[in-house]
Image (cartoon, rainbow, N blue to C red):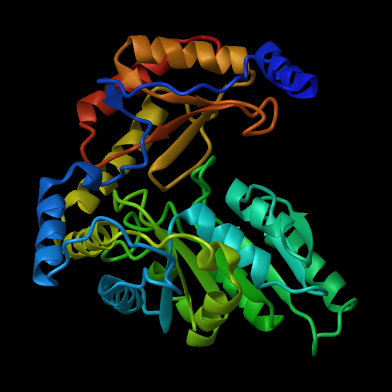
Length: 383
């Protein structure tokens, strides 16, 4: 039997129409996955990954252990070197997932006596890592640099800056809003105040930059960022993540980051796929198709007079706020019945009254489907 207090929590979720369950993939038109460039279904990437394994004479299904034991196979050096070069970073350290990277980084880098200042909309993996840290943490209002500056000034007066440090944490594209902070202004603030800027680029990699390198590089501010967290499970269509920073940072993580030390390494095929996806990113036209679809989606929002319901975004994520779990679920079901896979984001994942439909755009969406899904949405008078 499940303990009664746990049953009660499930009952509470059910009463709020917020109980999660696992669904199956559907043949509906995809407006929900993170596969922004369609790389997860690319046969060319699949075949190239196989060729990488053949070229390195690797016939191995698993890593056999953690990287500090038996799992540090030769493709790790190949992949991390490629990442460092691509992202103009002194060093790169691969993790098994974005969640592992974030809980590992934030649980071990900020020390007792340090201060973490994080955007209130930071991803759950960031918040979970912060909760494991010995540092004190405080959130600042979403994308509010003036409020952040005031917090930095306050805590700089309270700490011994020779012994302790302030870490400022944000995302280049927020996963539940699709919006972006003023990273140039933010990086300048952190440089002026000698604070350490950490940027999660999960939803920017593959979408922004000349070759999909992310927003930090697109804005030429990588030298002002202490650490970048990048992931491969979104636009790159594969699996894993990496932390980008200087060599000493990566050495420290290898020695003290528990989510890195105490886990079986990624298998060779995963890293071969990452290398193949990055090679494809350099030459693929899919990024330009995605850019066109994002522009078309924004135009259609205005044409259908929906701009007051959508959060402003230039990314592949666009969110239509529909207050209430019941209401947003009903609209999502209606869109799914019309053939579009659009998912509702419910509270408590987002704050109450900020429930929303989350539209994820892709290079393979047609302009006709984009037009139709927004016309269908506009037909609902309860938005």
